[in-house]
Image (cartoon, rainbow, N blue to C red; front, side, top):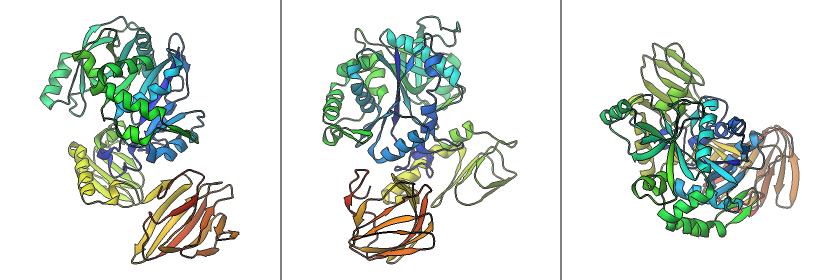
Length: 495
């Protein structure tokens, strides 16, 4: 039996603003460690196949991600040394049910040879050995035709999670523990108030909804045909109309945009308990492995390593008489004095301060930014591109200054601008410059000028990052003033 990891890398993580932004969401961030949540999810696969009894053949991961994030996702997987991963691109977000359906359609020709392990890209699991044992339990159920979810054993009356009501034990757990024995999935319930959540925990019959699943591709497609045939038909049209683009598979945009938006829970899992159909059934495997969906800043504090005062910090942070707080400094020093149960997050263009008990309401600020069309909800001051990154340093009337970093061997597109000229100064490395019919090299402390309307390209022929300062001048300096003639990354304008 093959175990096929399916990693769903969608969503914007608005409750984790200002670090998480629409164009650089939380799964791509390393909140407190050296690796991003996405990378930790990929690495979680190491050893899982060997932990199962009997051992499972672990396939390369299949990732479903937003088209806007494709190069960043691919780069983070490449950094891990993982080759052969499949990346399916969603042109628009349509929630988890269509995303999983695209993945299942990819595996449809594999017959019944694979079992899918479906995981969001933005979860934390502190005990991979316990998780591996739970996966083995779930795979055994999936081989019998079940659609399996993991229910997290509650550690308290959490109101930020949905709950799963469990029924009878299906069979003994492989480790002999009654606490980890698979159970019948009786019902899903929405996020409760605190009193209801306490009653759920006290009853011992409820688990937190993890959003992770195990099932065969054919079983998922059969369930979608039964409960959401419209989504299945739209996804099939989108997948069959798609094309391979370098390392990515692009589904047809028009067909996928016409697809309804729905979650795995609403589309199928809940209906299995309320509208049962012969041949389709659901099970729950209890899981107690230090799980968190890192859904809000309080959760980031919980998964961090606290100091003696209970503070979790990252970056240049000083504290005095401060307790049980989260302080993250990205660019400047943070000094916290007399704080308790607070969250302070500093980035280049925004500072967020909140009480931990109200940290989920940060999304209300994001809603205000959206209403006012503020760019701070979409992107950071540093913007990532497949060739590297750029960061705004200063701007004023008719000028803008950027710091540009080009990865070794990378190249920007051959392009021109209708409304601006550019002056490039190399501060580190060597640049190969195309300017009209000229191609030449410039090194540290050298510069060149790109007149308005002239075709140009910037390349890094070296083995070290190239860093330049770009001074733009002109009547209009927007990123949409780009006309591309050649691009090795297959991008359209302003990508």
